[in-house]
Image (cartoon, rainbow, N blue to C red; front, side, top):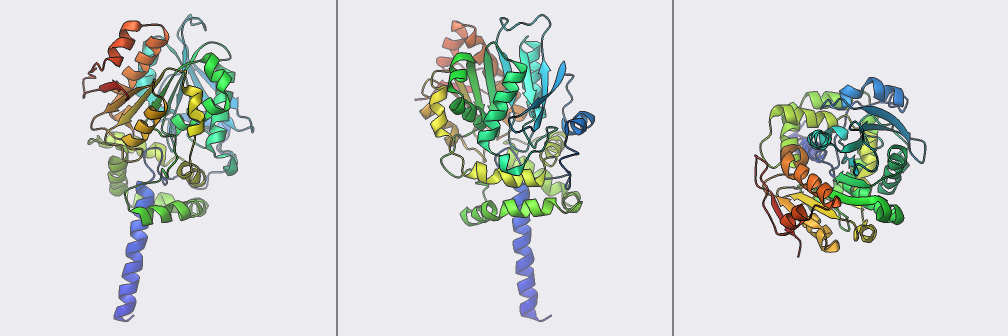
Length: 392
């Protein structure tokens, strides 16, 4: 091999390594584009039976739920749903809280808020979105935000056919709620007493910005889906690549998911959620996220009490996205938590939990709580400052 061939080969390897790192980095947090694992899973293995058997494997933060349900979506995909119901609860006791997780995550990502809500006496419904966690993997052409809105309706109908609802969504889960509000405005008006939109966006501009430059981001957006789908068909390959690069994986998750240094145990749990998502599903959702525009759905939430929470160091859905939401929903409370990243419900649980509980109190007519938050009261969580205020 002559010198020019050696240089060309080295340049090719360097480009491949950079692209691979970009794909791995983009996996984390909920609106990025890579991540993977357990390549080669068939739809059969992700059936309801598989979900029950392997629940603890996917749900990295164990939680003793009161009830597990198998809820069929409009296209027949079975969704894994968990219901926590305080003793003596009735629809008149107060709203049911429905927690909707983000991209490449699962219901485990709500563990801290779920515990606090149950301890406060609220009925809580959590579920794994399609092709995530232990829900069934459906046809890839149904991996759309519109379908996720329909899935949320199926979960509501099956678990809470009557009574008030408070919907809480992180990242893609927030987009799911917006889709639901646009598709079912009457249900939203009549039954949704409040909504919390966490680290999310209504779209209108490309969401696949991973800090690798416009050109490389664009290449990953165009070629990432087919690359990931093809890789997912090669049993064992992705797992082998992961095993060789745990340090890089931890570094990518730290950089893209969090704003402050996190313990290795937390990084590994988040990695387990992310890399438990099938590659082909990740590839199918990428164009949906990149082309997302659910701004037309926002009027469905205008008359609903809404809180918008963002992390100031979120590199996946930066605060500008939450500000755009706040501008479109001028009655909403807008909270920016200083110093935290995209997975703020795990990194700094207090402000997110306080925001949801405050929203629930407002639905019960707690004027003092509402007025305090509107006046810009700062609420401490024992870890950092919570900055609260009504958007201009």
